[in-house]
Amino acid sequence: MKALDGSFLLALGFALCAGCTSTTPLAQPAAHGARLGAVEARRRAMSPLGSSGGKISHVVIIFQENRSVDDLFNGLPGADTVTSGRNSSGGTTSLSPVSLTAPYDLNHQHQAYQVEYDGGRMDGFNLDPGSVGCKGKPGCLDPDIAAYGYVPQSEVGPYFAMAEQYGFGDRMFQTNEGPSFPAHQYILSGTSTVSGSSALRASENPYNPKQQFTGGCDAPKGSLVQLIDANGEENQLTYPCFDRTALTDLVDAAGLTWHYYVANVAPGLWNAPDAISHIRESSEYTADVVAPPSQVLTDIADGTLANVVWVTPTGLASDHALTTNGTGPAWVASVVNAIGQSPYWTNTAIFVTWDDWGGWFDHVKPQVYNSYELGFRVPLVVISAYTAEGYVSHKQHEFGSILKFTEENFGLPSLGTTDERADNLADFFHFNRPPRSFTPIQSSLSPRYFLKQPISSLNPDND
Image (cartoon, rainbow, N blue to C red; front, top):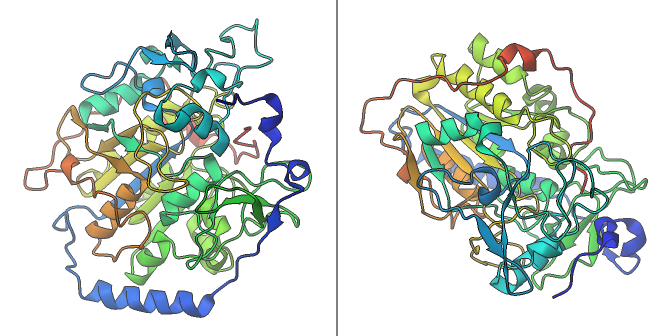
């Protein structure tokens, strides 16, 4: 097994892609229009009540950053977590408590996934060099055990409270085997392909010519993202702007509304609509891609919550190692509490999940569908007035499961991507029962703290 070395941290840079070929996705506006026409025809033939019998009229997807189940929810009652894991030497390594704000990050590019996965043996986590340069600082672990960490429950109390009061999925798998940029494409479209007719998927985070992270159809000229093919080769590059159907298109065709809340509307890894050309070039981008994320709190209070909502964090509230200041649990609690204490409570389904595993240890082997799917487990918390207290789902879920729930709830057709094979999260809901009352999630920070935060230009990722 080959260990990740320090040079791999920049392996996606242009200097190391001298042998890569370049491809440019072709825009297909006519095909896109035809797809939407078919979407509308199928929608009209479907029940307007959807899978919830009309009880859910708002779906809120809260997308946090870079944590595995064993790392963030270790010890959650009823969930499958462990206190030690295998290493490449044939032994075991005990999981150590590591603060949410620890001063190091781990590699979570596609090659890091492959090394840690190690052909299904799940024993390569000691080969991730993420804490190099951290030794001797408070909170640091030696590189060979750095990935074997768990966040103490005392630091993420609101997350545990949400999971214990509502539902938790301990078989939720990140759909892609890589970092944030493609993961955010998957939560919008169920894939990261460069077009609706292409098998090439964006597999890594894009760089601009200055070797800085970027992403989207307004990324600086010369920006490139690596692609992965069916054989698992990452030897092609393209500009990080794509043309494929997104869930927002289905929502629009049904006459429903959507909002995508982001730290800023500039090019970036977490701004998924920015990388879909027909969204970025439309007036909807200005109207429906909203910054800062705390605007969702205002919209809830004003009674203007859209039917389908994605909420991405600022870097500080993201849970991303070496970026977060530890306010992520309070941030998510503020959104959940705002909905729970509003008239939206009985007609909203909230899904809280994390975009990738962040390099952290996890012991459950994912199912492999192809050269880039599935990735490691990430947490999933499901919150609604129709979710049983303390329910832990052991069924397999992925990002496409959230998309499928949304499609079926609103009577939308399938995107025809990973949502087709995914389950619909039905085991979390009991729509034949009266709605539960909401109990506020206790948090150390009030919504006012987040409402005062300005639009952030902090680069949210650093792998």
